[in-house]
Amino acid sequence: MTDAVRRLRIDAAKRLGTFDFACDLDLPLAGLTAIFGASGAGKSTLINLVAGLHQPDRGRIALGSTVFFDGTTGVRLAVEKRGLGYVFQDARLFPHLSVRANLDFGRRRAASQADRAEVAFDTVVDLLGLRGLLERRPHTLSGGERQRVAFGRALLAQPRLLLMDEPLASLDTARKAEILPYIERLRDEFAIPILYVSHALDEVLRLATALVLVDAGRVVAAGPIGAVLTDPVVLRFFGGAEPGTLLFATVESHDERYQLSTLRCEGFALRVPHVELPAGTPVRVRIPARDVALALSRPVDVSITNRIEGAVEAIDAPADGRSAYAQVTVRVGASARLAVTITRESAERLALVAGLRVWCLIKSVLLDAGALALARGRAAQPVEPPAPAAANDGRA
Amino acid sequence: MLTAAELDALRLSLQVALVAVAASLPFAIVVAWLLARRNFFGKTLFDAIVFLPLVLPPVVIGYFLLVLLGTKGPVGGWLYDTFGVRLIFTRWGAAVAAAVMSFPLMVRSIRLALEAVDRGLEFAARTLGASRLDVFFNVTLPLMLPGIVTGSIVAFATSLGDFGATITFVGNVAGETQTLSLAIYSLAQTPDGDVAALRLVLISLVLALAALFVSEALARRVQRLLGRV
Image 1: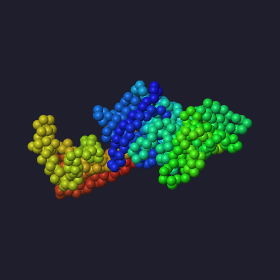
Image 2 (image 1 turned 90 degrees about the horizontal axis):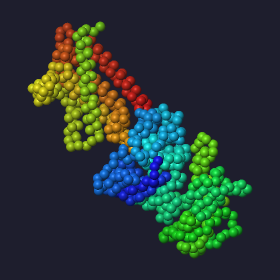
Image 3 (image 1 turned 120 degrees about the vertical axis):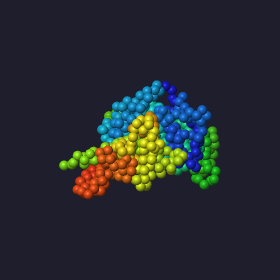
Image 4 (image 1 turned 135 degrees about the vertical axis):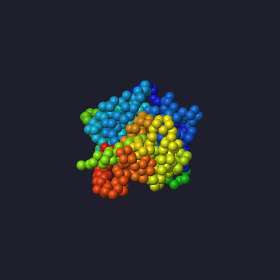
């Protein structure tokens, strides 16, 4: 796959019945960009405008230098010419064709263009574990198997961009846990950008490298996932969901004596219980906001291992005085921002203000379960999907 | 076992019915598609006209055909003058009568099958690079197949059995337009024709049952191919 990171530019509006959708996005597409929001927020509208199922009422949609739609010049690129792959929530395999024929459907029609991916049949079949299913018919497959074939079919269409509309929504927890690692492999082993629609926060946290937050037909926030998830506006939006910080770190070293591992983040380090990963492995780390305490001076006589110095960036307490909590954003290391939940009372007692130097005491660090499984798998072929709920709770 | 005349009638009936179905199938698919997928000015009227043969007395349809396609009629005259083609008193005219009478049933069956095709599958095919025509031939049509098969067989049976439109339009010419139904009628009118008529009735019965069995078997086979069984 060629060159520079492609940009997806959407500046469009669409009215569907009483639902009004409008957005102005300029996304660099790399890795997996999650489109997240509540049901009915407009996530599917967004992805279907890109796919061409709907045409905007006005505006412009372009992927790289290819214009999909332009209201002023009248350009309207047909769906089949957009070079996309689409994985649907309900798989949508062709019932009159075998699995092999389904997989070949897009591949046979993929025009050989310079900027299209080169995805080989065997690579995809092996990656998704489809070898034994090739001569079967879709109606004989289980839900999870059907969805895997759907992923394969979309990939083999040599897409420039992979669209996924809640692909795991119709699967039960066990099937979901079985397929999530496959999506991670898709993300990591092919250089094809993915647009992933979901209303499930756990999927987003596990898979996404960038996040677009949609609410009531408007884009609320967009950017790299670490930045978006510590944005106070976004944190308030998440309401019931656990606010926290997503960080990218590298495994640095292991301490055999105490069975601890050190993770190097940008400008600081975290110590967690031993992780079975070689040094240099990139990991995603999640720190729930409730598991961070603040101190005005560096605590010495305390059991918490991870004490990180930083500066208060913002304090967000809902003005109506109904909540006991305040969300504090603390800038740590080079550019990371830690989300911290403390009581309003504590915030006042400590006289927290923007710019104040504080110490963050981190009680638990969750590791990306997928990375663990993938690494374990690489050590011992073949890979099997991990058991669900494998988050390594690094309470220290 | 069968006399030459009986064989003639049988062969003629089969030929007329087969030609009628084969010729009207493409039109039926197009019409079904128009009715199922398109909105246009005059659609309701068009729908009504297509289904007229189901509602009007067959003799009336036959008479319309005579007026329109007879050698002195507007279309029939043009056909005769330009191509030398004559429909009345010929088996081709009988085929036209049979086709017109069975058309609405064919369209209805195909239309139902078309409406049952998941449009989501068609969109999926387009995301995989298939043009609209490509989608129709490789996704829609295969999935419509049960309806096309059923519709064709129903049309075949209806064509076999047509009487009123055939006799009014192309007359009762032995060996040319005297299909099974017309032959039975003629024999029933003659003094000693009862036995012969009965034989033809039995043949018709066998044909009808055969058509039913074939229809069932084909339909089940197609369903299995489509993965619905």
